[in-house]
Length: 313
Image (tube, rainbow, N blue to C red; front, side, top):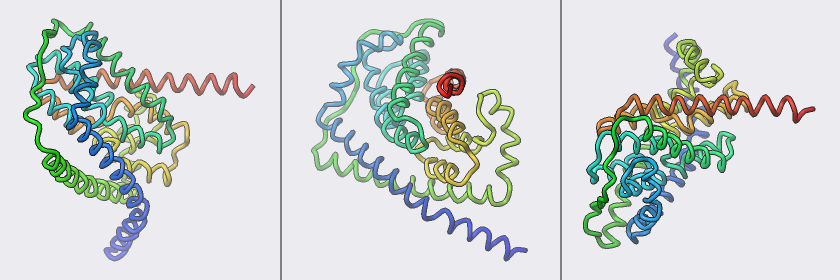
């Protein structure tokens, strides 16, 4: 019995290695390219210039103009980049919560759009939807949350600019650390996913979360992908998601419904805890995006209904 289990485990690992390696290389290429581009934008002061150009818009969200740099950094890079800028600002809980909600909707835009497009979603649609939803939630939270944020001008402490070779070396070390971490997480998660399916645990997990999937308007077949996106995120979870799409019983429309949800609501463990530690109200970050994702899923279902009703006729 032990030998049989061992052989099944080995077979699962061998099965996922080729596709995981291919996806891992693809993810790393995008990540390294984007991070290098952002390093250049920061070094040559182009990113602050972009942020200054859009800073007046942020008063609509009840945020001081300096928060634009934090948002733009998170938009193109990741949540960590946003935190790095945000911690240099003197923001109250209200401003932090609004800013973090917006960033959680629309962070790592280049990488995560590539992942969503790989699953079958429209890249252009995902960029537009995520950006608009982040703006809509920013406006709504500014209207709903009690009090008002301090909109007085404040500057971002960027520190002294290092030499280019120093900046390049710091980027290389940071990118290397990130790549090694991504490789470890991606391979581990994909192997785990395959083992869960092999030993029938996946179905048990689906039964536990099926009621929640009903509330979200999602098919029960998408439960594992939903778990991956919420715990790990779209970047680290890309390999497992793509493998599941290739080998699982998930239809094209089910995937599009899931994309409508996770494009707004994902990374609800590590990122959520990190932002809460910075002063954001965690349940507002979570529930506001869940509400928006439910709207998006049912809007997608309405599109399917209209297409089936009118287009086919």
